[in-house]
Image 1 (cartoon, one colour):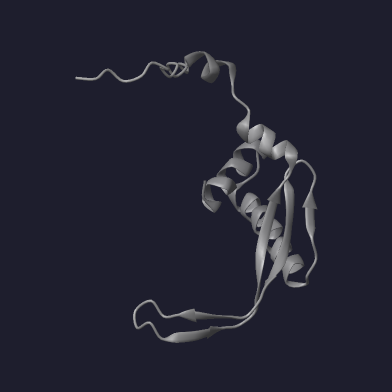
Image 2: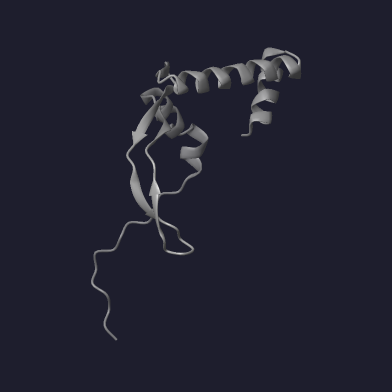
Length: 114
């Protein structure tokens, strides 16, 4: 799903204009970015939490030349999904469970010699 798809989905479900939906989605994303820049943690119950992690400086290599390169310390965004989100993603629907066929059991007999 792209940001445009998300905007269309919000527009359709909330019965808003596409422009209003775009403002809502952009506002949410901008708020998340501002909070992460400020070092705040964002927690959305039932979805997950966003925070930043600090990466230490390190020595890397330029893959083209093999030259050593100093990589500075930096903050990276990190998302941790909630247990509810993990459960929803891994939940199987009754149709999917009925249509899947179990794998045949492994044979314990030794291979036949020729």
